[in-house]
Image 1 (cartoon, rainbow, N blue to C red):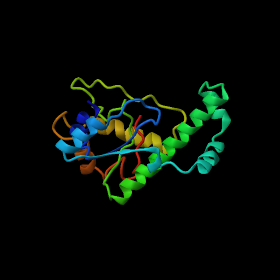
Image 2: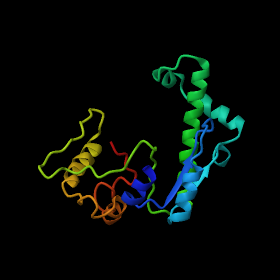
Image 3: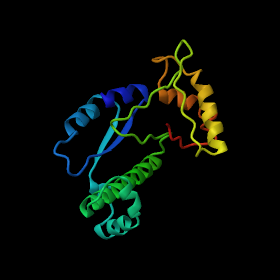
Image 4: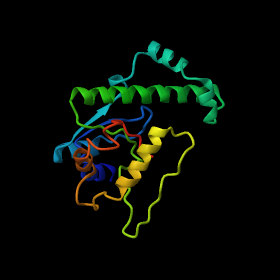
Length: 186
């Protein structure tokens, strides 16, 4: 479902997946089907494809503040170490993935989990919208960008008339993209 949706909505053409090394199942049969029957390039990376050697992992884990681990509700040393390894693994995967796509000269990339979907957040035909709650932590530039995004939402295309990728490409020289090439979407 996730693959089909993003293939259609975001014109997904390239995908890199890192499966949890402790996973008992593999997405390979599904990925091979998509690789054979579409124009998508799907790669399944193992830890050896992006993780540093053990000594480097130890150094990177040591840099993660203990307080951030405690905020997550982890009490035991074993849990702390697993969460630290997860954080290192996630950062290494994202960095390697972005570098891979940069070398391939991709126009745009998206870092997204399988429980997240990129969708148009359009104001409905009756003018109803669910506005983003304003945070006191936002600086003036981010407030201006958020206000511009709220305005843009009114002009989003009808679902099915163009993909999110087509819309982003067409408007890449406009706000908010022209001043913020990396958008963190709320």
